[in-house]
Length: 197
Image 1 (tube, helix red, strand yellow):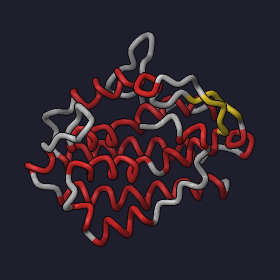
Image 2 (image 1 turned 120 degrees about the horizontal axis):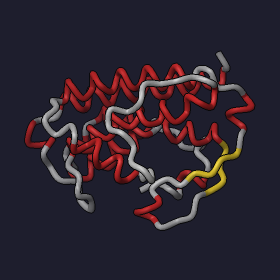
Image 3 (image 1 turned 90 degrees about the vertical axis):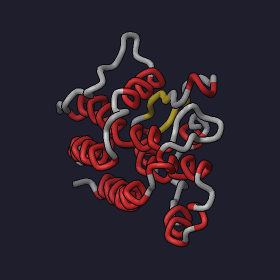
């Protein structure tokens, strides 16, 4: 395996371990708490992180001549990432945290299989990245594909920070402070950073 992709995979795994621990420790009341400045709850953000890898795996697989299982929430036509995320979250309103994390593990395994196949040429390719375009109203940025992967690698801690806006007392827990303080975003291109909310 390309040592550059191994670094991304290791980072994905490190953050997913901590994220799963965090999710399983939340109370029902905490899960239902709305996120300030968002129409999503804590549980909705968890559902998002547990489903998005299915879309990423299916989208990235053709780059390396592979196929990944299609997302259980079918992409609309024309495709809109915000609409897809909303539909995926709403479709899982009755799922437990354990069910969401089990689904996440399946999608993560598919995504990792695809990432393992990327070459240096794939990682260095320049692509258009639109990110959260509806929310930010920004045109797509030209970014290096490998840099986008680093943005994906820190998706779990990024949204854990969003969740903690709703749960400020949790944000003081020492293990969360250490985990989130360990996140290195230096590999993420500015074009990816500015396209995120």
